[in-house]
Length: 199
Image 1: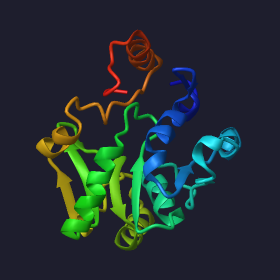
Image 2: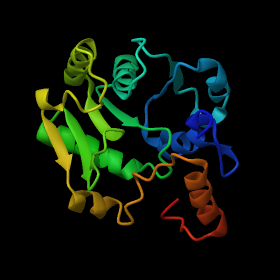
Image 3: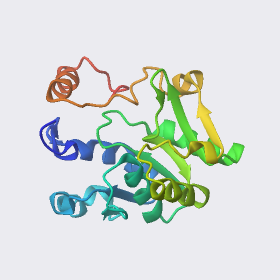
Image 4: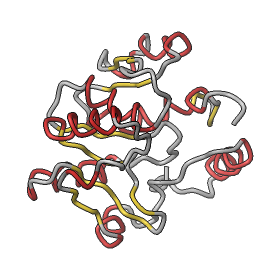
């Protein structure tokens, strides 16, 4: 992207603000994990998030998806932790609520959507009490992949049918990895090609 994704301008504000605004209403706390705390200080002064937001640096000095996941779980104070990547353009509050409900009903430790691309660990909900130690153990073993420890816990796989019933347009997992991708999605939103349901 050429600069930190969280801070890339998208529809007039930093991309990270989009996810926080879409999901802030269902969260008791909002935790942003980043080793670039200074550039994100502006988030804490925003009244939009009702003082629910905390910035946390990685607990382990390892740059990996797994390290960010561990920091999120470690920093959380609630039993269920929704973990969402900052570059998702349409993160879905209803889908995360359904994942939490699945954890309660099934007793699973992770509720994660499964798409044609595989697991979506950064639009999933985790049971903190059981997941934290397994993520830490994987980190200490040198693992970096976010799902490397899934075999040690009970995973509820959210099927395509389950996902489509909540998100019929399937946009929850759209992310932007290049300036071209970002510009394309932004243009569709600003032109009205994407409906309010998409947004």
